[in-house]
Length: 496
Length: 104
Image (cartoon, rainbow over all chains, first blue to last red; front, side, top):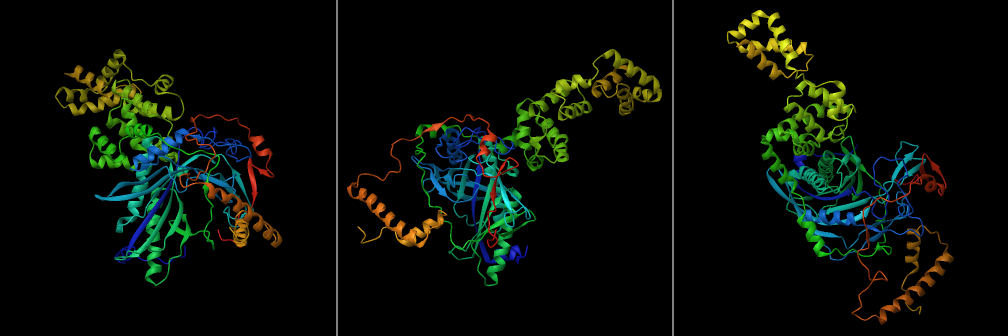
């Protein structure tokens, strides 16, 4: 990092930041955009490919209806108009990640256009104007060999085309004005909104760390009071919420330093670096010339207005409305709800657990403690922890019915996480149910009373708090497999 | 024909560069002349098409040809890679992408 930076607040006293965000969303359809190849993540290289996605001569693409449906639903969620008729276009470029030497995209006839969406930051609503949502295809994955493993200095590159042809939606904003100092947060929250939206729609896994959502961040500055846009930089493929925020902040500080020193911002593509800064990307003398033309192998898409209305009527609840509703039905405070939102993925998992019949408090407890800890230890997202919301609800049901106490329930969860089977299977195989044999329990209580005559005397005198010592003894004798509440009740009964 | 070029020699040179096709000066002259004749011939369609005929990009007036989202493919990794000039680790190996003088 060699850029001069200007203090953030100082920049904002003199300049107004203007943002433009282009977000690529990889859809979660079962098959690719133009062919029947699977889209599963993490398979052996070049196993999910066919003549169509390899662009072999004579192969012909056919549009995936589900991808068009997803694009329309995304557009409707962003309050866009839906085109009555639109075409695909070929974007010609030579780069080995696209075996056809062109990407099928949309050019001047996007499927969805002219939308807007509101993002709230610190109680202030910011209107994000949406220019378009269009359909295209993802590219293959390059691995550079030699040098530092980066494209420059590499000896050669290796290609896996499994991702080539996976449906990709591009969501483009118009220039976003008037965010002032909130610009980084607005960009972040907009991205978060999109992630939550595509998940709620069920059209994408929305996993940023897997590149399901990636953002090209355009930032420019203009002197306060000016109406002329400044020269922008475009930072490509920013793939976490935090990085989107940091990119905007960094570019504001970098461009502020250049402009206030009387310099000129270079229009260029920049790279995001995990260490928290952007660096110049490939600079080209001439602008790209993609020679777009209507895709001759595909016919136009003309969505039936009745279909569009049907999709509009079935849109899920807006993510912010859903949050408000969940907070209310769970009866939690702003702060407790904040704890839920702070853990990536926790909201959906807890909601699913509640839907499976678990009490909200218990669902929150499991996901935010035991399971969050497990996810942390394994360094995986919470949703990748090896237990389903239904299984968590099943464990809690066993607790509620008195078959498991807290300690045993944790052991059952541990067993499920270790791959020992369903909660019922773990209970059976590990022998974890609390002892409901009242004879055995009664005998253990009698033994504890006999062994602690002074404690028993205190309880008889009404000092019920002393019962804890006896409960501890009984639990020890039962190897933890007793319901503490039942033990307490039995002690009181015997000593009253 | 030939009084006014529809496509200039420098445009042909640019297109050749974009398409990564190397043309000698002689070839460029030849191509520019031939392409100009082809374009002029095709342009004559515009003379007979009346105002009420919209431009079209497809010969068949069809819309909404779509397939259901169903996985149907035959795994054939070996076959897929068999046609590649060089393969490494189950991947297509391609020459270095950027030249030394190019910035990344």
